[in-house]
Image 1 (tube, one colour):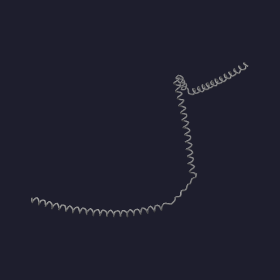
Image 2 (cartoon, rainbow, N blue to C red):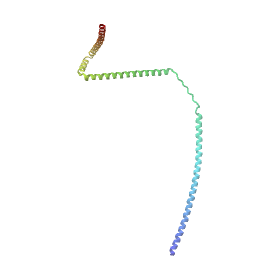
Image 3 (cartoon, rainbow, N blue to C red):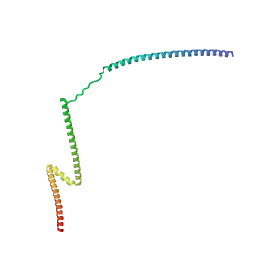
Image 4 (cartoon, one colour):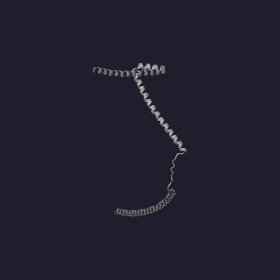
Length: 193
């Protein structure tokens, strides 16, 4: 038992020694951290002071440079408006007028071509319809035209003139018939009186 007690005492001594050393280590760590924190805080304060001094110096130099640039800029720049016609502008005006005239003529030709194209499309459609309705007549017309185009044109002009004469004669005949009926009515009225 003595042995156990001795061992316990030695363990207690070791423990108390470890506790004292641990406490002293904690004190050392705390003092080192405090001194390090103080050193870091002092360094940070010094850096802020240096930064403020440096930035204020840079700001002062930048400000002085900007003020010098502002002073060197002229207060008001004078602009002269000079509008007139001279020999150089005459060529420009003539060129512009020529371009405008060319554009107007081009537009007129384009409109004319568009109308002619529409007219030819209509004629082509009419011819195709006539070909469907009377293939024999169209075949005869084609053969006349391809044999002698000048003769075909002359023949067409003769037939158109003949057709026009016939229509005028029919119109005159209708006018005469109306006149005859009017005369007959007048005659009947005269006889009945």
